[in-house]
Length: 422
Ligand code: PMP
Ligand code: G9A
Image (cartoon, rainbow, N blue to C red):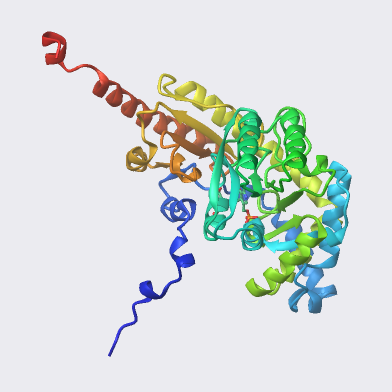
């Protein structure tokens, strides 16, 4: 009997695939004693179970055949239409159902865009840090990733501009810029309006396509709304990804790509090879949810729930964290607080100590194409119960305090150095 050596048979592409740190952490943090600030999960209290129950009963009564049959690759027409109407109403974004492709989570949208645009010699621009799921989706297709740093106002456009100028001189052509401008994952920051305008200008100047990923745009707790890049796009340069994962339920796996027709048409063909069609059943539920006007009521409810959790985390951080070792901007929305520790504290090395105290976070380096960011961590505040946020921050503060002190001691001159001067 011979045993196949599958590892030797996998393609180069398969060998580039990396497990998501977040997915791995989800297993660990399902342990009941752990307070997890790791996964970007909605709070179960936010699931509108009763309304969904009513809708499901109605669908099974009124339109069971369409809901249970295979559907078109593009998605259920009424849902595509509802999404286009909503984008127009909310942000004055022009377009119709033809510009909408329903995908199995926006994660699938990212993969499809990677398939369409990235070849082995392609260069793409991402933010540093950037969304880990996008890194994993794009890396499979083997691009060169150029990382442009963020600050508290989002991507640093001056650095982007310099890079684009230089690239143009050397005839390097970018496939696209991937950005999460509103309540960034993981950095929590929101790109200012002036930077958004500047990015659109740069896109025109340097013939750049922008992939705007916006799962958190509707989750604002303080401050004024800023329109998505897509709303400022006057030349069909922005491909916009939205999802119901954070606003309704990730278990639906319903998301959409809103973009220029040639891109949507090509994505449809790519998607046919992937899953033929997005599950019609959950699309039917989602289209009814929108049609019955539930989504805005629901958003009001979760904004209040998550806003409170964001305040509790911000207050606990302020109260308990040893500020000589750690700093963080308070996010105005979204699901994450991003903290930067002193350079000498490696959050990967510290992770096992945090787990020993039954508290988890996502390590910073997972969000950087080059593995930097080793002194950063991402904390989710939407999933844990309020008292668990306080307790988890206390525990984490204890771990960080211990590491900070130990690292500071390591840097003191040794006694014999002080005495002998060596
Ligand atoms: N993009 C970003 C920035 C995200 O944070 C997430 C989910 N964490 C996704 C895409 C994927 O979302 P979905 O559940 O729609 O696949
Ligand atoms: O469960 C997932 O993998 C989605 C969550 C993403 C995140 O935590 O950023």
